[in-house]
Image (cartoon, rainbow, N blue to C red; front, side, top):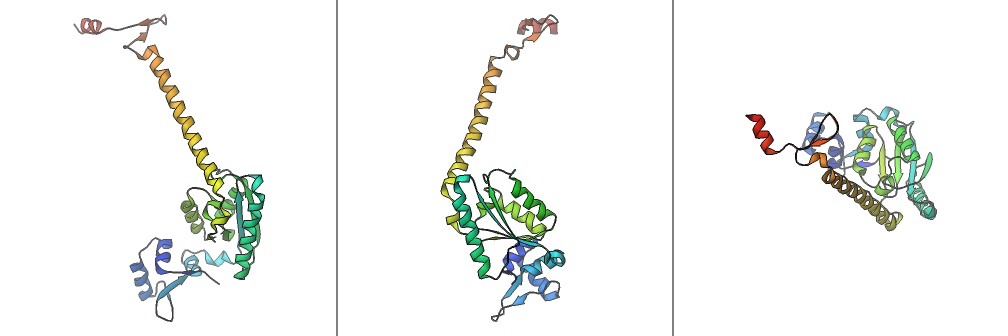
Length: 225
């Protein structure tokens, strides 16, 4: 069963206004379905058809993606997969592949995650099921969701906060603070070097013998005469 989209959701996906959708519906450009109460709605299939992706979508894979930060969280990884399986089974969806990943959500070099994104860009993935947005990526989820949409891939977020360990968020925030602290320390260290560099003080320059020679204000005035 195709996912139902409200006019507002469909408009956001297509980058148009709801008013434009209404005009398209009236002109037969993109016809909306109607509820028994005559309210407009659309389907994910319509969206994929409109962007020219649906002709190949039936041959694409449906995958589950689960992630934890450390090997000590393997039980959490199992819980994510179990929750996804329970969700898709209730909807009659069959998973073609289950991907489990171990690594920080701040790490954009996760091998399995990058392989999945490559398959998305190769138009091989139909749907990705995840239990929570931060299981896919800690920050920038909206950007990656848009990338998937451009390739006709739907990300289904089940929104189970219990599968997103609070300790992971704490660890990721500590990691970010550590990185910026190191950068700040590096800048301060660089500033101290600049302050201590005599060649940058008082207009000193190096002569041909490598010895510093200060140019005073009076020397400048004499030279100008």
